[in-house]
Image (tube, rainbow, N blue to C red; front, side, top):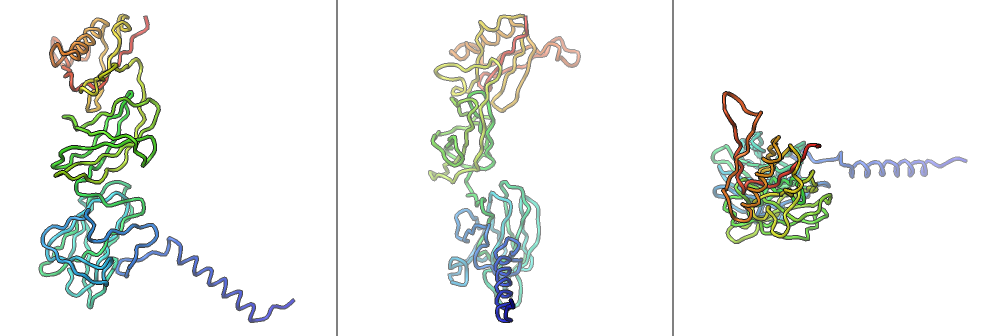
Length: 362
């Protein structure tokens, strides 16, 4: 059976159209620097130049026009703009213009590159700069106009899907460290923060518990009363000048029990700045390994007689009850270095997070 030329042509045209549509919708089709990009491409989230997370240094002017994304754009002579974002790639959308700067410095985490917004004529919503291949983490971007009497334009910032701009007062680099029935949290201090709020839960993005946090002298905050073997997810925000910031990155940890480490009933040592305890009646052999975990995460290990272990426990419990000295000296014995008659490690009560006693077999 023969197929007419018209039918053959129709079939070929349909196949060609299908191939073209498929190609145009694949991720391999992407805008290049210098091209117009009126809307963010698939896989990118847009942030208008008015986003509060973007900080403008110096004097900037705003232009209201539908030629810009969101109806307005911003420019400056000889100044800079900066922002932080969580993600692995970013784009700057601006203009190409005769009066724009040829010498613009883009610094990402201190690594510097150059870009230009200069051309003859004027073109809006242009992809001026793109950076990909970054680690999936927090990055600090500073864009500086290095040319006098020429302008730097900002219209939009695009961040990869799943990433986000971070506010100037948002805590960053939140880290969660597992401990017995608790988790230690660390984050970068926010300048001028009056307080911090921690939210956490058992599912990513679903925070069912809220705690007002105060960081200790080591920059840590301890979440007590958690269930060993259960994974928890945490975020933290800061209050600056009475205003709550956005939340940090999410961090997770799974508390795990260790050896004979226990926890005090009622008011736990972690709530009072101390650590866990071991029952003195269980420490009755000849020797044991005492491992003391400090609030900064450092672990100190000692091979001691049971008398020395029990003396340490007695001091700790006495201090917890409100009596005794603030510090305790542990003899390091065979760990001595140099011509010393003794070498002692002084423990501060409020720097002890937990301790563990592992008794040798009798």
